[in-house]
Image (cartoon, helix red, strand yellow):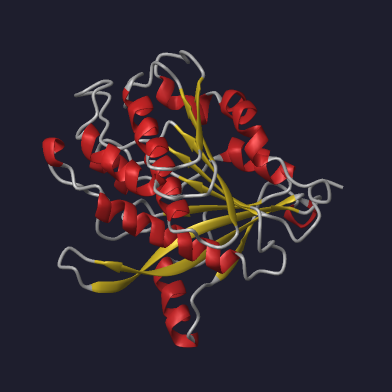
Amino acid sequence: MMHKFGRTYLWRLCLRHGLRTVLLALVVGAGAAHAAVREQGMWLVASLPDDRGRILSRSFFVSVHVDDRTRGPRPLAVLLHGRPADEKSRVTLGRARFTAAVNYLTRMGYVVAVPTRVGYGVSTGPDLEASGSCTQRNFAPGFDAAAKQTEVVIQTLRRRPDVSATGTVLIGHSYGGVVALATAARLPQGVRAVVNVSGGAGGDPQRRPQQPCSVQELAQQMRQFGRNNPVPSVWIYAENDQFFGATTPRMWFDAYRQAGGKAQFINVGRRGTDGHTLFTHFTGVWQKEAAPWLRLAPSTGRR
């Protein structure tokens, strides 16, 4: 059970007391009072456009994880989920969970935030990341809405006394990898690195395996995100990615680099039957490659 109260009650409570967030302690395993990793649920609000261009307040859920065995204040890691190829999977997502990645990062000494963006699972609402027909995708509005939500997460968490004002890393899988790059391009304070695992958009492994939609349109987005962007990033991909294939991600990377983005591309070869599962099924592989971007200063981390 995610929390004791219903979402409607929580939202009314926010409105009644003029609060932007309501924090809920979540039980993490048996004996929560003695557990090393604490998990909290948080509702945040972002100002986002609707399909008519009107700016409306939208609420979305964020889970926050802290390992009490690490020193504070701790740097922040934001984990950004992808986008399912079908609508049913998007709506029934529940809340985004990356247990292996969360455990890895909290052990390293990070406070880890995992937002579930508007239109996904518990964060109900319009599908702000829909981009149109396959041949003429308009990716910009979706990335903009996702980046704004990510910025709200960063700004809110950095105000906590147990979170450092510097050292934030953005880690995204699939569509979330591009969201991480889009957010970094907005130069939010304190962000020092991006880890993009299997990042991209427009893929459908069932109907168009390894042939994503509108690859040039996404390359143009990458040029915009890379232009004069000083935030270093690592791009980690498997060759047999059924969403994006072996060559298209490299083309997106080249567009990003040529525009001025600081980035390194890492090919980890073939992984399983679908290399797009790299983030969730081959955690040790991407973690090993991302480690240089995630290492903390000697004064931070486990006691």
